[in-house]
Image (tube, rainbow, N blue to C red; front, side, top):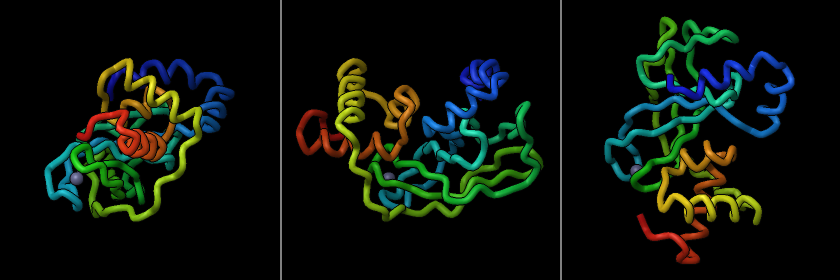
Length: 168
Ligand SMILES: [Zn+2]
């Protein structure tokens, strides 16, 4: 787990913060290398889930899924959502936890759902973030702005249509 957790652990002392975080629609993320079913490339995908505490916890394969607030011994978190960094397809997968340890993501499939229509405010903030950074991974934009990956990707596809960002 990266530095985010240390910051968050200070915050979770206050129950009110947890409620706030939940209201803001945050999530926890599990990163794994998978074969994208859309473009068939090996890609590193951050799969996001709201099934845990939505504290922006971040796990890599091999990490213990264990915090002050919860321990996951064995389990499968279904329908975690990610997106392929190469072809931008929305992907769903099952997060596998065994003996406390994040093992990987299985049963990767393409999500067929239609993208949400982002609000002008979200469009504006993603657009100015991209202007500022030049380029960024959609998951980093989602993290930085505290919005869902789906919203970020929806905005990016709109901006592409409007030719405000270059094709990947
Ligand atoms: Zn792909």
